[in-house]
Image (cartoon, rainbow, N blue to C red):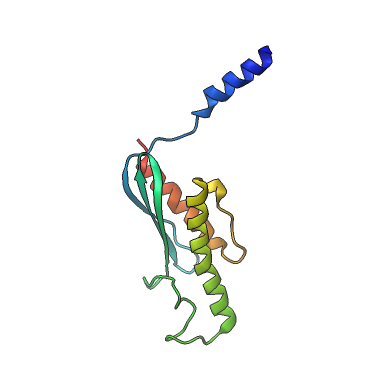
Length: 135
């Protein structure tokens, strides 16, 4: 019984360790650039000390957003394999955002094979934005 009480006390004591308090507001951060010069931007909305919204965009070197046209050349799909891979990354961006919002933690975000640059950029940008939001 003593061990059970001691274990419960330790759980209570350590439950608050490592949890950060965040200031309400909007916090944006950029990731570093990848080998092609592309980068990510995350904007977190914090209310009541918790993340209530997350916007995740990735940008090409030329400053254009990676969206449904990412992977096209002059508005046309000239290389189907490249376009498919590019669009996989676009879909992964939404998955990363959704998993983060659903789980409330970066630990709940799983990398998508073929979109690891976006995954790493997402993690980096969220961590930077959260660091800015810390009290």
